[in-house]
Length: 258
Image 1 (cartoon, rainbow, N blue to C red):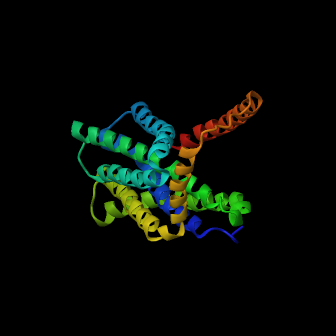
Image 2 (cartoon, one colour):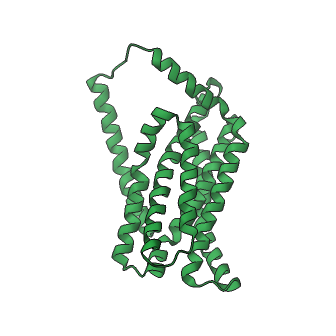
Image 3 (cartoon, rainbow, N blue to C red):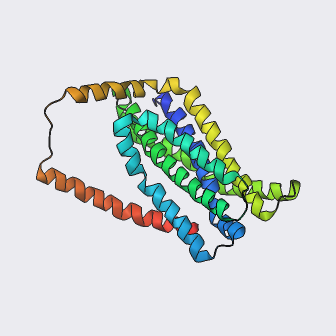
């Protein structure tokens, strides 16, 4: 499984590990933060939480359209910087008034938008690593390793959130409400690490971005478009619906932990 994998896989996997670590650190305590800091009732806090998750899962569609126009590499970098600003705003102790609520809402929009631009397009880059003939047979194992890496970040995130909050309360004398901002600051730091990994090891996947430009030039010259037959289209739609049926209910159940 680990043999004959492109070097770019590890750079992109670690960059996504840092992003997922920050995301799940924030998500682990976010609903509790809404109740502790703003005094929101469970129903309202849950509505805000679920609306944020809805945006996280919907906005990758926008990320795909943007990638078609501007390139997936550019959207990955744009997305991670937008996410960073969102986490940074969320980490600021702005109090409990209307300004703080508005800032919280803005941060959620930025995080969701950044995730939509970043996550799906980074996975496209991983897939493009396996377009080379020498790696074509390793695509499935490569994606398995990719998801194993990012789930490591998700696994340790909730514990980190609680530990950093306990440290802030006990060592710095920070109030319970303000200690949540330390957990959100961890997300900022993890994104900085992700950005650093992404740029420092860009030489391992730069050919993917170069090939993207070549593919666009080739597509522009094509005049004939191969269309699927009605039967082929029906088969693909049925497959997508079956996948949706599993994925939707899985994530719906999974996110009840919030």
